[in-house]
Image 1 (cartoon, rainbow over the protein chains, first blue to last red):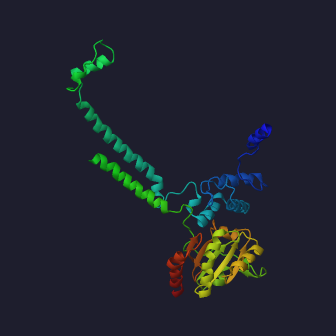
Image 2: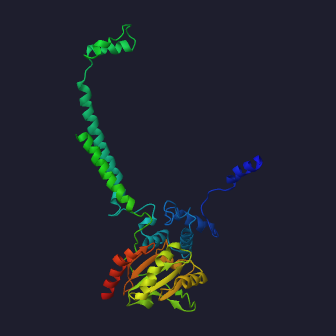
Length: 161
Length: 175
């Protein structure tokens, strides 16, 4: 029983995660296809690239890309074809457009707002801190707490501080 | 006072965005095919594989192009709506069985009824790619000039039919 369990534990060793490759007849073309597909999004499982997805549609799209490459189309022509069918959404590197301006500049705008707020806050706090000065009494108490004098802090005086 | 108001307003703005986000469907990708010509194809007819159909055959008519499959569960949900629509004879519906064995498509239509003027089979899903299909069912409204005017991703509901598809069809038919 224990041996069987051990065997089961070792089972995942035999599986490995690789690109979802089908039909690698022409290795050069296949490499080019995978290179292109890595920058394209699978539409069914949206957080996976077309190269790594096992979805049926991804397989079909890889076949389509492969066939278009065999026809001698350039990478850009193939990307244009897919964009005309599925929109900019298929690209992991979306082009700069009116609709994607927020996507490209939004984070920088947020950073700028955050930075301005931080500077404003820090400046304000600096002013606050400078105003409070340590009274002689407090200094004495602090010294006592830090063990610089053997004198114990006087509890009754605290209320006046 | 502003100490509390600023975070409060930031929270409200964030909450509004998140609330809108809740209602969005991330799997719905806006189609770039709207107001473009419906991609051309020739496919064998489901009931007569020797005969071909191509979208040019529908020139001059407004029609619905429904992409479905016998393995698709959501297709069964929307199917009664198409049956109803075909009985009313408002607009011709053409069906495309996507990545489906013709025998299975036929059994499915026999079981649930056939609302289609004509059905074709896209066995390998190539035409589906041309139409940007990524999740069946999908339904297109194509006008008299063969331009795609609307694309429904996922099952059509009575509400979508009444509020979007049928008014659009009427408008396009009047043109």
